[in-house]
Image 1 (cartoon, rainbow, N blue to C red):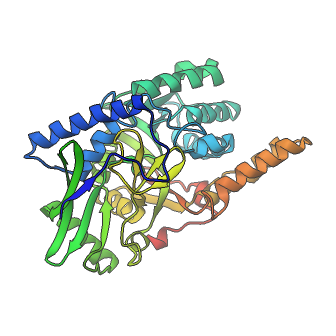
Image 2 (image 1 turned 45 degrees about the horizontal axis):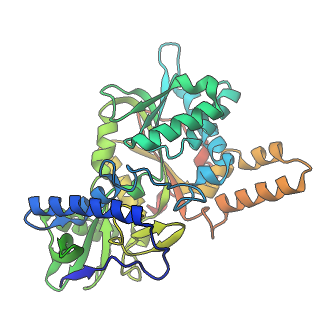
Length: 403
């Protein structure tokens, strides 16, 4: 079946302005060129990669406002500085355990957004007297790099020299703590469907100036991934079931593990364990799109102007880490992680007699911790290499037995 996607916006979405539509049309030309180079069709993961990361035109690599109230979504660091302070408390423990007179520790943040999290972490670690030797930000978007530099120079100008921007991982990383806050959900995903005769995968093309898609027999990689899920989690997919998987997780972890002597990866993202991810009732997968704080499921609407994401299968992340001889050192909810790292104490230190300030702080904490907000939907996972100390962020609630 061939599905055709019109350029008109769904009723729930505001109409983009003419300049934005022109940018999207230029990106569509790039997608059409990619399709032409591959016999007329590309995998959905390739489409998603172009839509999000095409230099100058992709959603993350262009100059669109993405974060905050004027963007398309709000991340936890923008909700409250308490998020970065709690994360810094965890980093403080790690740096203390990993550092020695002969060994230093660096922090590497993937995709630092507006730079608010980096600034908050550095400020809190400065107050704790435990700054890392270097704070690296791996950011491919030149526009976001500029915003991050401005944020850090304004918030912690005395620490700006500690921050270095990277476009790729260094060959030697030494001892490093990696922060991946809402990173995995933005990695290009592969979409699959269970057909009557086997597993199919979604392909994307361009026809008469519009995006089209169709399911075709899946390649060996996708078939094997579906079979792995069936075997290890005892899941029976029914015909017509559609979902997705992240093909890049193992390569992403491997690239870091191979270059670091001692490594801790802190992953903070929305997601499920595998049995929840591929629940029989979740027949259309987890992929969602965001435009001006409105969520919808049309990944082909004006490419380049909206965020495209998929939830994280944390069980798959754990298996990928295990295959690389890394340890899963903890898995918990965001609420439990923040509370174990001093959220209540930080709140008590900062609250004043100002009623308005009390209300603001209270609302921030609710957003970060309530199950109906970010508290349960977001999970935190720690993966380690050559690090055996317990992590206090998982002392309150550890859900590794549910992976």
